[in-house]
Image (cartoon, rainbow, N blue to C red; front, side, top):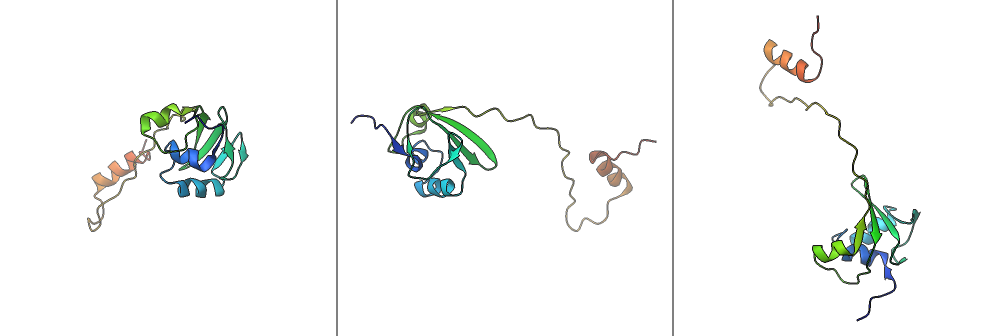
Length: 127
């Protein structure tokens, strides 16, 4: 069978394993989480080789360049060959102090525990 010249966007996103089901892909497209070439499109958009697809997943954009068109869902190694991941690396995470919680029913903290909590939260008594 010859390679197709175009494929529905929702089918391609499902086939390359970006979404678990085709209906999830369709819902994401309808919700405006998927763009092709920077423009919002419909699920029935005819995707072609060379186009750029931006997918917003859990608050982060994933940028995929279309290398190969797929009609059926394939294994992960074959799916990875169908697109080029152009996603920029995430910005470096700044250190965030862990939130200090006490076990329920542990009572009030002692003076020593209060000082440790203040030190962890960055509120040291620098006198």
